[in-house]
Image 1 (tube, rainbow, N blue to C red):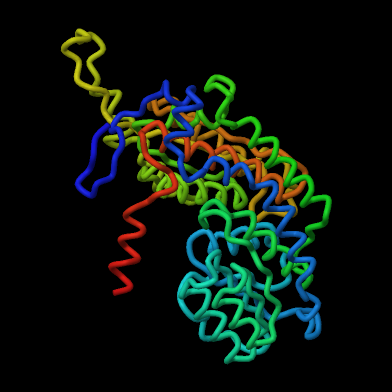
Image 2: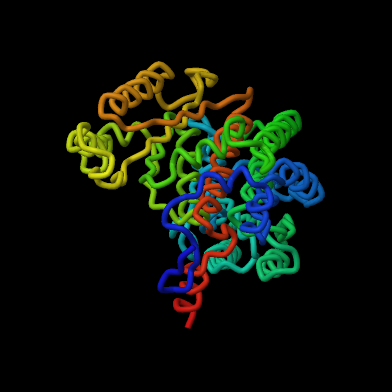
Length: 398
């Protein structure tokens, strides 16, 4: 173990063996990030029940809105991406994630603002809720009970969906997402039924069981993915809009939990430029400069290399529900795998499963969520404590 200049302890090189030692895993995860991540299925059920108790019927009084703005930052902001993707290109109104304080200048009485904050006190969500109230827009608030956000909602006489704060925001994706989806369902923007929620929760439960700490690396997909990424620069691309949301989510958790730099985004965009990374100094050029005849004692340490993670939608979405024909997405995904293979860049593939968009998204998020935690643990890092985030808040709030 070593200590960095900021007092952060960990290992520069991942210790693969410790992941198969449940006691070592538990000792390096004192905050319980694995446990919180395993609660994703329970989060879906609890949030659905809490949303059912909220007075969402108030949203229906004025009919369909002109637009819906989802205001939040970090994981709360990702809920807007999920809603936009689940609603799909045939959604009758624009669905706009907003990650800055306040709301866009055009928001008015014809619109709906959904303010989301796990703590109930983020400036972005609070500013958006206040602005929505001033402008006469319909408001829905999602966040911790007895918080500042709840107070704003009560002043505006707007629905508030309480999300008990049991875990860090980044481990509360599903607790925050389900209320947003159900508010949108009330507005007639998405078709998410109880069966979809039940199947999504069951999928998350099943993946949590597969990724449990007592399952050894050779049968645990999250541990295998983590060990494959160890010491690399990850590139995470999604083959479809749905898979791209999952890719960006993986980028979030790799950065926050494992402190790895990561390139994440849509494969369609990558094909217009970023796919060139495969040819670069961390990609194909690494293999070209390696001396295969060098003695083991004389060989240089293995250089840092790219590792591609491709999230594929699996061919389960109907062509008429997508921005692009499914065949185009599939050909593009096949092409990037071939490019990576030709350049010696290793590639991991996670393929979506499930009947609904929400369940498919869950199947692309669950294993990577666990993988980011196992990667942190392999480096001796506590995935819960991120000193740089705490210091950033202290310095910026002075």
